[in-house]
Length: 564
Image 1 (cartoon, helix red, strand yellow):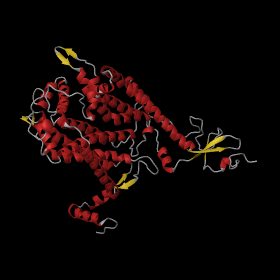
Image 2 (cartoon, rainbow, N blue to C red; image 1 turned 90 degrees about the horizontal axis):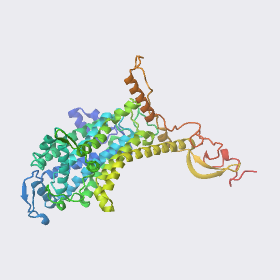
Image 3 (cartoon, rainbow, N blue to C red; image 1 turned 90 degrees about the vertical axis):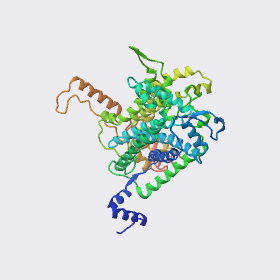
Image 4 (cartoon, rainbow, N blue to C red; image 1 turned 180 degrees about the vertical axis):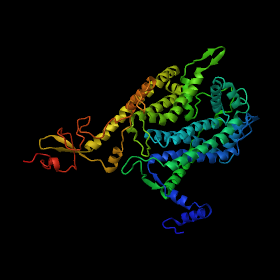
């Protein structure tokens, strides 16, 4: 078998696989598969590599951790807690931290990798959302991503509670309170998790099984499906010169993408190791073992659960009492509503947008966020909603540090949770339109050079030059957002009934608001009165040229004065 330009090592592996599996053609085809190249595409690799670090460090920790709540007297090497009664889970975590060689490094790397895993998924999903990379044919992959984020939150909660220290015990108490507030099934759900009345006897062992077996197994399966779909559908690509929905402009998987990804994995692993070595996180020996009667001041959860804590703190003390039954809305609404709004909204958004715009085309070229201002504004409003809840999870710490009233901060948070997203939406929408106008100005008038010319009639102009090909292709990659008409008849021409007619008109109205061309790139004249055809207008404000004394400036000498 001739190797041609294929490296000998790859040819040898390919020959070995082909002789036994008949896989040479498969490997040859996929090793040369093209992948678009843009720095934002690497954001999705951060959670993947963090998950690998989590698996490696987690396997190490399972060798030494004891998932039981049996009471023992601590006699380890950490002096301040020697002789204190504690659970075996907490004692084994102390042993990992102080007595196992490399144990504290592995614990801290595991915790930092967990934070990086969730943060990386959030940033990756924001990139996909703002650029519209969830559209057909990638809706299923988007839903898988939402499920991955939801499971990552559950994985973090179960792992966070295993140490059985005072801080994680407080989080577990909140979890139990939320579970028992569910109507009908709350008591059974709480007994299932805890193994009895709070704090129960089996919660650590049950959370341990969920944390190392069930949830990681589902995560691994979903990540595999996510990667397969990404491989089959390929990455989306940024708009630019020569890039369309029918082609792929990029580098082959081998060697370019493989080398880049390998280096990025080592970088991610190195950063996690440095954080684990030099940045202390979750020092459980300072918190002490968990007892239901104690709680530490200023307790804060990990960042990814902060929005649930904030919603609990903002919610008024509402409850409903009917026929001897109590429905604690002050717990039930904060536990379900923020998570429901964010996760359900994320999962359904591709299908809602498709219904509003009627766009069922395949999209392999992403949008710049400015070119879909309503989508970008919705995303920023959701981030603001999440951020206010996240900030209010620390309202006690903020009040103590800045000497403010805790009640006043709570009232401000209750107002801003509604006002903040609305303001964020409006401001973001105006910024997107402003950026679109700047793009239109670059196409219509060129790029400012700072060179001022005096024309024969004595007026002054600034010379503009055309944008370079890359920037122009990026700007011209903008496409109008599709809209649908207000249909009052069905496909057979029969008038629709009242309910369907109202729905069709509502859909058409939403489509006109959401879609269409907000700021056209072409036209005879822009909003600022400048000509859009790239020629020197009569207003004397700008001219596209090279900055030399030619063309419209031929009547002026080198000093900018009119020629005699």
